[in-house]
Length: 322
Image (cartoon, rainbow, N blue to C red; front, side):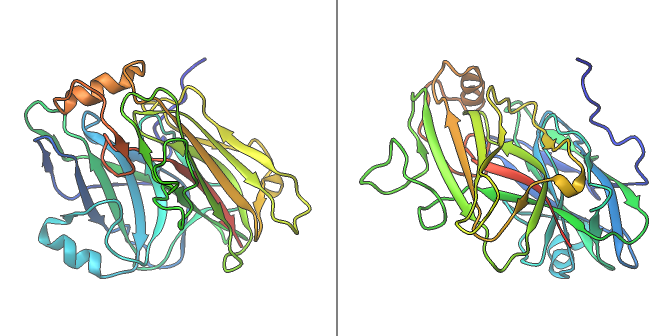
């Protein structure tokens, strides 16, 4: 089939990172760039797309909106600061995400994304060095298409998973030690499973789910996301997504081919289950390349983390609420 486009061709505005950064040496780098979308009132977004400036080193990108003035202080005159998995402030909303293969994120017509007056965007870029010399990124950007009118619903993106303890949602696994849940993929293990769960609390409204995606790194080979309904629900359990033959270099969000009012709804007491399968051996063709980048010639134990040689088990959800 014809490959889908990864450009947002009808964007109204393109916001580019304010300065160039160098990426070198053996370690991953996480940089937060602050840009101003210059919205003066409640503003809605029909679609977004991140454009990696240097795809040799851009591992993934998360774009947040925030009303916190702290990000300007941290960015200073350069317009950016080194960060990690988040952006360093609590008041934030995820509006766009990019990983290799991701198509433009088009929100449902009935539920566009939203920006508040005066909010800034923080473009969190995870860089992975090539291991050969210095690479430069000076042009990563986000395209936005605006939405007209006042909608009944608004959307945002949510990342659920990456739980590190049994208390937070990590379930017991086959290679745990001392019967304590731990996220550890043993070196040389060809078939290893990690499972996580998250139950929707009563503090959140019912959430209409219009998009689902899976995110792991190079050790991941298959991910499944399922919903088990709460005891009081009249709806059926269902499989939300499965990505066998998972490929880090071709990720995307999967949008339900349904009218908006027919998309699944997460109610209080419903539980998301995320099951991730990994191959941490040389029978996984991505392992040798990933290890070679770090000067390693044998598999190593892999743990949960942000860097490229760490792993994840993360669901990506497009959700809407009134």
